[in-house]
Image 1: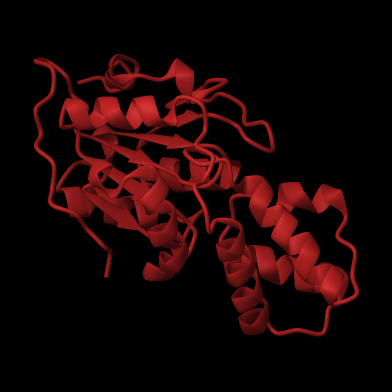
Image 2: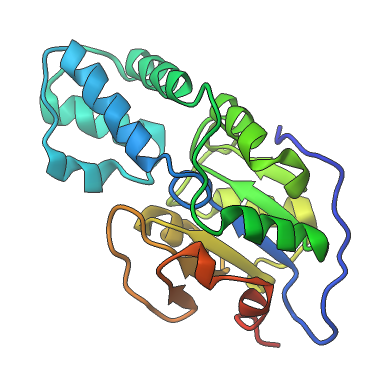
Length: 231
């Protein structure tokens, strides 16, 4: 089940085809991609292994099963995927015990979407226990619903999380704007048929059809997002 708060209204500018905005979490709204890598480095150090910094680009933005599985195979660590998942989630929770650093422009964008009653969803590959902790910093009132990576049969880079979010909001994925920071998340959103705005965090992402790349969330406002969706 996805956790929800009461659905927002749908008041939009006359003539706008934008129906909803779907937002990634780690590295997009909160500055936490580095947290995950630090936890991975720490956990594997405890297992007697040193992670190669180049692997960071492989694991960033991916589901826990893919990232953890890759690191087990790459290091040969004597640990199961289930055991490692517990350690990584616990290590991350320890790091986000206090207020989280929001990405520049995140608070303003969320406030604007709420002000104009744009249906908004948080769509993350992180597990529900992590999302619920992060929502306390982001403000759950800004989201009509949230989708976690452990709540779908296939998480990013598959389209399932974004399709589920669109269905939960009762909107057409083709009329949704997605904001992402990694190639994995972009692949998921594009496979769902959404328009994507990318604010790259760890690794660069090239522009493409139905994909716009910007430097910071400060470059994004409601007018910008509405301009992405053609009739």
